[in-house]
Length: 152
Image (cartoon, rainbow, N blue to C red; front, side):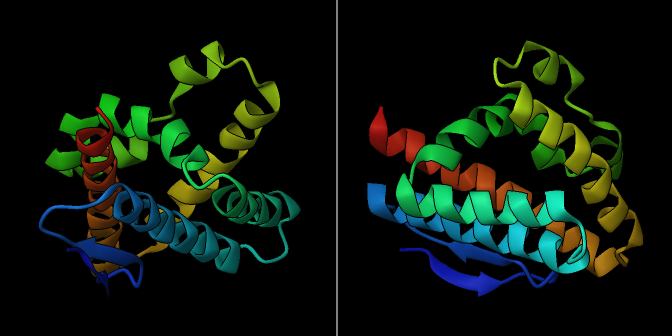
C-alpha cells in the first residue's frame, strides 16, 4: 500500500507495494491536485492558471480517471526522460508536436499558456524544490504505470 507523503518540494507523493485500481486513481489525483494547487498559489492573480486549477479539481471529482487517462500517456511517452531526471528535459520540453496534433484547441492553448508558467516556477525554485518536482513527476508516472498494470 502506498502511503502519501510530502516530497522535498512540498508536493504530495506516495510509496506503495501492490496497488488497487482505486488506489492508483486516488494516488495520481492527489498529486495532480497538489501540483495544480501549488501552481495556482504561485499565480493567484492569473485567471488562466486559476481556471486550470478549478477545472482540474472538477475533473478529478466528476470523472476520477479523466486526468489520469489524459496525462498518463504523455508521461509514458517520455518515461525514459522523466526517470533520467535531467533538468534539461524539464526545461526544454514544450510538447509542440503533441499540441499540434490536439483535437481540442482550447486545451492545447491552455497548455501552451501554462508551460512557461511551470518553467518559470521551476527556474525560480531552489535545488531541493526542483528535485522534489522531479520526484513528483516520476511519482505520477509510477501511479500511471500502476494504473496500467491493474487495468490491462
